[in-house]
Image (cartoon, rainbow, N blue to C red; front, side, top):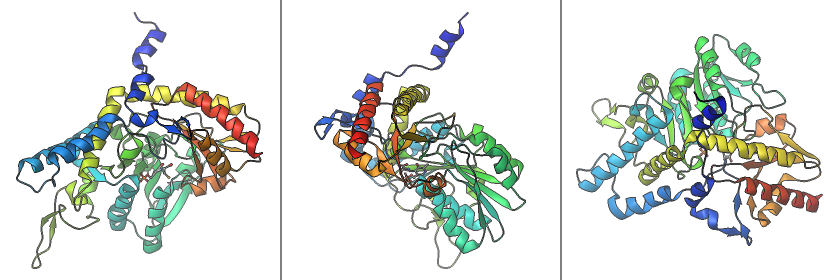
Length: 419
Ligand code: C6P
């Protein structure tokens, strides 16, 4: 019989951080004469060699437009592109590959839902619930549409830790609530939202739920069927993939019922001046024009890389990095952490008395440490907490406890300089 401790060890494989780091050429570089300490992973993660190599391989061997060619290169490119659809399906545990739509990223995925589903299903008097924790890309598309169609946006409040108020959430619903738009993990505070519970409540009340998974996909296993998400979006470049490729998952029956968003090649069945133009089946109905072929294939390589390392091992390692960093910065006089939810992923946001976040960001860069400063495209959240900007360190599989120590010491040094 295995004891509990052994079972825990078996359940979460440990991450070999040295082996992980060896996959990332960029981690060998120096910045201002010091080893790079890259802690801006929530903005974009770095890229492992197998992903970089996709571009050489694709452009060197089988660059061709997909779906339309009857030649070998086109067949190979199509197979690799469509192969990624199956990789993404498995990554999200979606039921079918046709539920996976390729987009440029999370922003485009949300705009697709707003413009295709939203235009067809929302009208004056309807209500959409959006959380206070949202990134602008899950706010502004809904505001633009609300301005046109006249529906109302209601805000799900957060408590002082940056945790959604579930009782208030449940009370916001009326018979006119059509959609909940909420992130899985907050980019500004790192709060992990109970999306399964949020979905259950939304569905009980007859509404759909769109989950912005941009900050969740890199840090934890995502199971869209377990969540029962109607729509789920994420970006390739935050999950060790390239920019320019992202994903919208949608339940097949919803995608099928939605009108197309953008028109063009690839998304049609037949085009005619005499009869109604007809559209391709999902997902192609939502993929007008030539997509970012190499980027999508590289996204597949990134998800394969994540699977090889193991998302459970990554989550476990990042939890240790976050705990270590939280403990380290908490010792700094006058530093206040924003976002103290019990369940957090990968993000440490803070402000320092008497020191501008911008100054800290610029000076700490001189010491080789990359963090992000600013509003993190979450102005409604930051303003609610009475600040315009924070400093944000965010973690990935390749960060080390030693890097966290370098960051802590560098932070103390620059705070001493600006105060
Ligand atoms: N957040 C950050 O530094 P795009 O740009 O489409 O790949 O992702 C947009 C987006 C949507 N939702 C969340 C929760 C996000 O964090 C982001 C991107 C970056 O936090 C850039 S502002």
